[in-house]
Image (cartoon, rainbow, N blue to C red; front, side, top):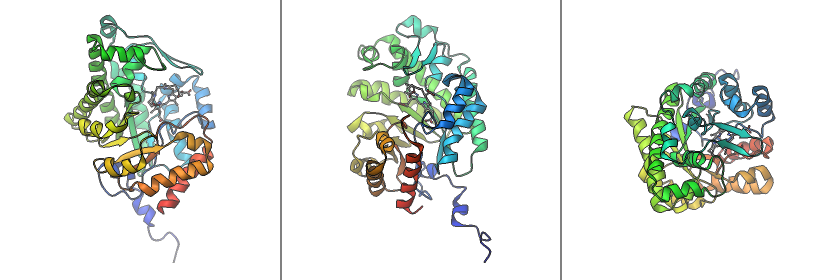
Length: 358
Ligand code: CP3
C-alpha cells in the first residue's frame, strides 16, 4: 500500500475546529487546547519582533507584526486556537485616554474619575481607531489552517474601568471599588459606555473572522455579591445579548477571575457559551457542577508550567483525568508567565495528547 494514498484519520479531521465543536456543545474530534498569553515575552522570537516594532503598543498597531506574533506559538505547539495579538487597554486608548507601558511597571493611563472625564471620552470613530486590530484578525484568519480557531477578545467593563480609574495597575483597586460601592453616577455611565464599546469591538472582530471571543474580567473577584451582579454579570449579559441581536453567532467565553462559588451564577446570568476559571477552582467541582451547565476552560496554574517536572505533570494528569474531553477546553488559570521555558509548554501539549491518545 502506498503510504498516504488513503486520507488519514487526522487529515479527515483536519478541517474541524475542536474548540468551536466544544463551544457549540458538540463532540470534539479531540480535547481543544490553547493558552492565555500564548504569544509573548517567554518566546525569544516574540522579543525579536517587539524590538523591531519599537514597543508593545507599536507592535499592536502594526498588523503585519501583530499577525506574526499571533502565529509564533502555533509554529512551536500543536494548539487548537490562536488569540489575536492586541490588548484590552487599546479600547480606552481609542476612547481618548493616554496609554503607555513602562518597562517593568505595566500600563499607565490618564485617569477617569468624574462626570467631565467620562464626557470627554470619544466614542465616535472608536472602531476606526481600532482598525489595526481588525486588520490583524483578517490577516491571521487567512493564514491559519482550518483546524485552528481564531479567538478575538476584549476586557470586561469592570476590569477596563478599574484600569481607567486607577490610572494603571493597582494593588487593591480601592478607587474603582469605591466608585462602584458608592454607585457614583459617572461610574455607571462609564460602565454603560464600556459595555457598548466592548460589544462594538467584539462585533468587528467577529466580522473580521474571529470564530469565538473571550471577555476578560480579570478583576471580577474584587467585587462583592451585589456589585458583581451589577458591574460584572449585567454588563457581560448585555454584551452577549448585543452580539446575538446583531445576528453574530460566534460563541462567547467568559473569564471572571476570582469569583469562586459565584461561577454558576455568572454563567446563568450572562448566557456565555463557556466559562474560563482560575487555578484555585476545584477540578472536581468544575467537572461536576460547572461542566453540567456549560463547557469549562482552564485551569492549570501557570506557575506549575514555569516550574515543570512533577508539579506540571500532576496538574495535567488531574485535569485530563477529571474533565470530560467534550466539556473541557484545556488552558491555564491565567496567562503564561514570562519566566516559562517554552520547552515546558511543548511538554504540556505532548502530555495532554498522550493521555488522551489524540
Ligand atoms: O497571547 C495572548 O493572550 C493575546 C494577547 C493579550 C495581551 N494582553 C498581550 C499583552 C491578551 C489577551 C491580553 C489581555 C489583557 N491585557 C488582560 C486580561 C488578561 C489578564 O492578564 O488578566 C489585561 C488585564 C491586560 C492589561 C495589560 N497588558 C497589563 C496589566 C499588562 C502589563 C503586565 C504584563 O503582563 O506585561 C499588559 C501588557 C501586555 N499585554 C503584554 C502582552 C504580550 C506584555 C507586553 C510586553 O512587555 O511585550
